[in-house]
Image (cartoon, rainbow, N blue to C red):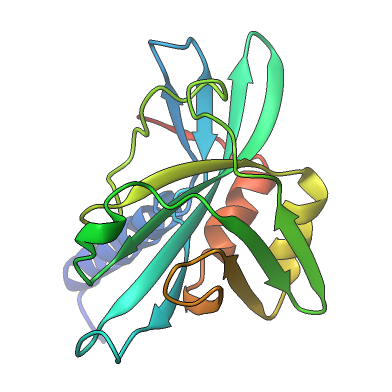
Length: 194
C-alpha cells in the first residue's frame, strides 16, 4: 500500500491537467476597444490543408476557419474568420487572395457568401489572437447558426476554394479538427477573458 503523502501530488497533478485541458477549449472573449465590439471566439481554428509537391518539398497551402460571435451594442452576429497562408513564398500573390469558399460537410455544401465582409464593418479592427502563419491574410465571412451546428456534427469536412490562381477548383482537406472548440463556443461555455 502506498503512503498517502506520495499519492496526493499525483492526484493534484492529474486534477490540474484536467483543468488545463478544459481551459484549452473554452471560448476566448476580447473587447475590441476601437469598435466597441465584444468578440467571443472558438479557442482553436479548424485548419484545412492542400499538399503542393509540384511547388516545393513539404509545401502546403492552408486555410484556418475560426467561428466568432460579435456583439455590438447587443446585436449579435456570427462570422467565420478565415486566414489563408502557405509554406511557399508566392511574391506574385502578395496581396490578399479573396476568393469564393465552399465548405463541404458530409453530403452538404455551404457557399461562404460573396467575397466576405470588411473586418472593421463586422466589428473586428484587429484579430486578437496570434496569426496562424507567416504572411497569413485575414478574411471574414458571415456564418449562420445552422451552418455552425451542422459543421459541429459533420464527420467529413473539406473546403473548396474557387479562384485560386494555381488551381481554380482546389480542395483542402482537414488538417487539424476544430470540432471540440467549435462545440464549446456553440454550447455557450463561459469564455476566458483575453
